[in-house]
Image 1 (tube, rainbow, N blue to C red):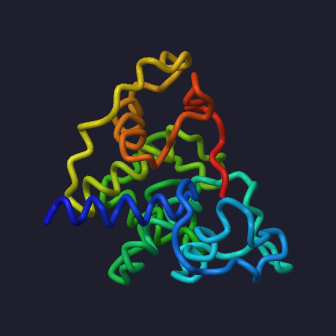
Image 2 (cartoon, rainbow, N blue to C red):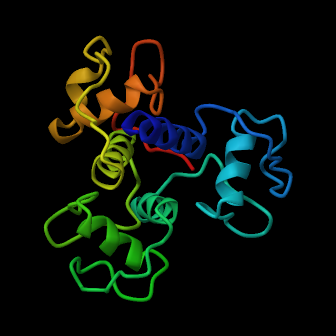
Image 3 (cartoon, rainbow, N blue to C red):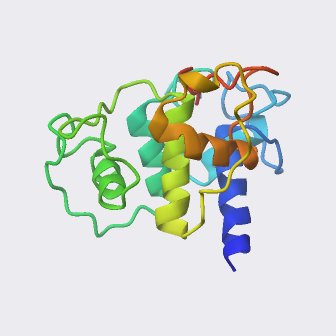
Length: 196
């Protein structure tokens, strides 16, 4: 059963971040996502499932930088947007009524995020690849009860020493399952901004 959950989660995440193009959806509704784009089916899938939306004016902005508020909102929606979230002002930069407010509180309540600091979340902050891996691993661990302690050996990447200590295990796990691959043959680019 846990293997099935892991496979389902990994496929959902992989489709979300556009590392693997599978599916039969067409991303023709966005004028900046041609049908032959490597992530077109994944973008269409994420849109079809209402995990992500376009940015307006018929665009998705696939190369745009993912923000911290966006990723927790996607995970919140993947979990079915639980309606039992009671807003509490945990982070001074997350006011009630924003599109991401409930998602941030939900993610914090489920140990998916600890915030950027004890009192801030930085919702509009750029999401890095190591942060993305950490959000995904914590989501898998706390919401799907999947062991994320077993990962690939990523010590061979030349920028391994630049990975933040909190993200090493998560990035290793994400790399093992193809959720986050090397940015090049020799680098994993943990601090590089993640794209939509």
